[in-house]
Length: 301
Image (cartoon, rainbow, N blue to C red):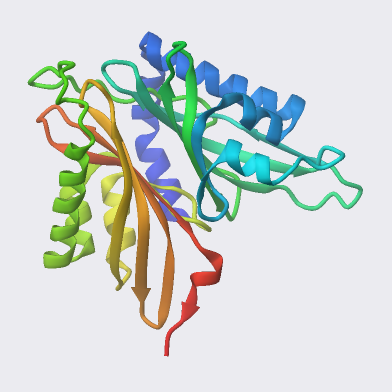
């Protein structure tokens, strides 16, 4: 806990400077849409808000990936709204240069309104958004983590650092080809297989990358992620299920299955990674999150 507090104090001046900078219009609209989504959740309930703000093919993990609207069809709404309130606030996010793909994350609170008044649950949501044909932002993927305590980070939005590409991104037929990220992921996997998970991550992480793992507060920044991964001895393999990339070729995401073995513990689940092209035209991980399958976490013989 002390290391997180020390990191926050170190980053605080940077955070304050970032907050002073105005958002670009596309990002501002995405963040306001996210806040409207959260307000709708509080007012109408979780199910109705998801139906309103998700794309038709928008994915959730229940625990396996499924389009939320498809899940809602096979899981009819209860007769009465569940006695819980889900509220959240975006604090970090970004959009592509072309303004058609974006992501954001931030803390959520799930409050029990039943007579039992169970303790509130805390965590971080993570959503990928995509512009639809009607020019509105809709969620195409959503996954969250639970945290052991409320967040330490300020509940105010912090825009990303400005890092213009040395070779400006242009919208072409090839620039938005998702096979680009397939190659990036395969290079990442080869590095992990050849040299280990830690070197692979350190080679691919952005300086302000976020690692979200269930049961932990977000691990923020390359140095903090290095310290976290350096304390763990594990092997990991994964398989890509989907990639998507912005038309401008500078932002994209991947998700798929993972298999981790750490000591005598084995875990399976789904990963999601957001990749961004840096000023040096290098693809870097800006957010990496995992959704473990509870029934698959077990001791091995």
